[in-house]
Amino acid sequence: MNAAPRTAAAAAPRTTTTASRPVADRSIARLRPAEDPGLRLICFPHVGAGATAFRPWLEHLPPEVDLCAIRPPGRESRIREALLTDGRSLLDEVEPHLVPLLDVPFAVVGHCSGSMLAHEFTRRLHAAGGPLPVELVVSSSEGPRERVVEDPPLHRLPGRELLTRVVSYGGMAQQVLEDPDLMAMFERILRADYQVVETLEHSPGPALDLPVTVIGGRRDGFVSARAMSAWSAETTKEFALHLLDADHYILNEAGALMGRIARRLLVRGGGG
Image 1 (cartoon, rainbow, N blue to C red):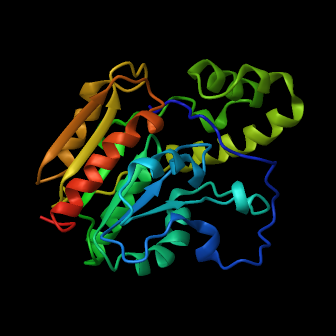
Image 2: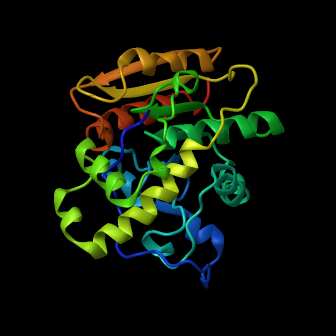
């Protein structure tokens, strides 16, 4: 089971889905568009987070890398939109807007619980016979076959118990429990996001015919190196596990490594 994440939200999401910007602009954040990209990163954030979770990588990526990230509803510029509670609905929403971005070599990236969505998106591309990523990169996540959902699942816990659990994981400040408004905001986002990943089933089928790279922390108290190594069963190609001097929350520490991975893929021309 992946731990609760550090959350990223600015105001409580509303329950209606009214927005004037096109869905493509709202749901896919181009954190640094490249004029003539040699590689595009398609990134899926963790529970409670949005597209800005990947901003720390910008300083490490070569300028010809186009960094794109999924922005689920109910946070950041989509704060007024209804939260989604179904992973397949989230993929259904973003997939049509991601497909036009697959016109250059691309890698699919997921952090923590976002790794499951990244994997399912890649499996969708494979099943549809569409373009495939040159690599799948996941972090702080057990392999799909190792995944265990708690009983009861986190998204069904009472509000204060859910938030207390998240604070105990180190994913949220203790001060949130002392502010009723913050508690209400984070509870709704976390509950919806946990329901997305806890109810998302692993699609059956053969292993992917593309390389898989896993990034983890040696001090991760929630996902073991053995559980991360289980991602090797999801590929028929090269598999690599990189363990950094970090805990579960690894996005900041992973920036330099992601820069090296991107440069490697660029040298290879994106593919093999």
